[in-house]
Length: 442
Image (tube, rainbow, N blue to C red):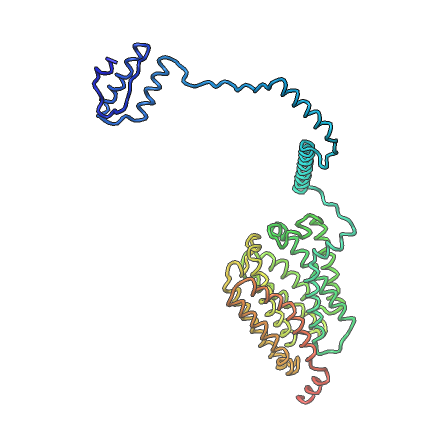
């Protein structure tokens, strides 16, 4: 207690009691504690000071401050109560009857659930491995075996059978519009020869564009891209279509029609196809290619190039711009990925403007038909509603410049051309009227 009073009573310490400790070193702890309090600039004692003293005490004397709790002993019942409880338990056991459990025990259900989970996980792993193996097999190069049953369908896709049917139908329309008596044999030879020439041109076009078609979603499933047929077979098929087709047109119809057919194959394969990756002029060249078949039909019937043939070619020429420009507008990503130079990709404003311009040109060309003595004056009036409608959709495409307007214009062009040619055929001037008019003029 004397060591505590030597340090002097602390000013900030109130209610602190020092008790008697057995060892002298421990007795000096309160003095050290008071000295720390005086040095600390006469501040209040904090919890950190107490914690520090506690750690000093533990490290110096290595004493355990934790308390050990003794386990609680089980209560011992008296012997007479034990007998009583045993008797009660026996009676309870005698009274209860064994009942079969309605549900399996928890352990069994948990085991079954675990077993089901393991089985489902194994099934999922097996499916994942199977799918992975299939994907690996699909990615690997493998030889395509050509079967004879699949060959007609493959050749039909190689020749673009729908486009070929459209080309043959326009040539047939040109033959039917000619001011001469109808010759069935010549008509069939012209249609077959034009169709064979179109098959040859389309097949050579796909042969040249294999590396570019593989980058486009629209053309990546073509036969040559997928390797369903060899390039040699494709070229052989093109040659087997081109030679008899040109021979039929030249020998069976007339030489002028055969020359036009051969020129169209050359223009499509050697000019239009490579120009698609060089300049937007390819659209105008392709329009010329599409305008030649009705001229071929007219020349097959008459043997000469007249104003009526040029009028039919002009209608097909103008119709292709709203048709193709609307189609290419929705395929801009594909064309840019394939490396094709199209108006919709490089000159979008010109693409829409040209489509609208040629929609309006169809109205003027329809008005020229009676002037050139091809149809009656009823044709411009009857064809005006459908020409105005496609012009309206062309204006919508020019104004909105979106996929919806381009899609509407494209689908309208699909039925507009056959409807226009049908109206033109119904309003065709008869041969007797032309003969009477020629006699009056003479």
